[in-house]
Length: 202
Image (cartoon, rainbow, N blue to C red; front, side, top):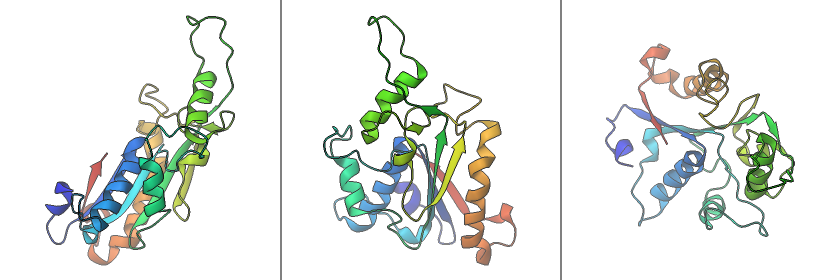
């Protein structure tokens, strides 16, 4: 909120959030622009929000919500691309299909697919779906957003060559992001390098 409010009149900000930072960024914009009790946000200074591997949708009612209801409330109050004047881009990796793992002992390591199963089940209720190894595809997108499915991309920096921030991966979401920025900022900027915006990472 302070970062946004401190911008000069001609400056704009793009929110970029990875994992929980994606939906928390949406919550900050929503509550900050409409709730008197939240830190204020001037939406006229924001051009859009990009989420990378974010669990943007709450789990079904019978699945325990790890956010204790915060994500559900955020989606009820600010569903989909709620702020019409902003652009939304959601990106999710498609790299791991969840598979239930029957470990023979507590000391047996959890497999990549087994970990994904447990994570997907907690996030969306279906452990056998596909996603980035932590967040399933079915939870990673918002209705009416620019939606990117990134084959082979993993959730965490623990996979330094194949996560959202890897050198060989960045352009797969960065270029579509710049295209959205161009459509918003071209009237006020002649060249891409002159775009008057800041990126605030969650």
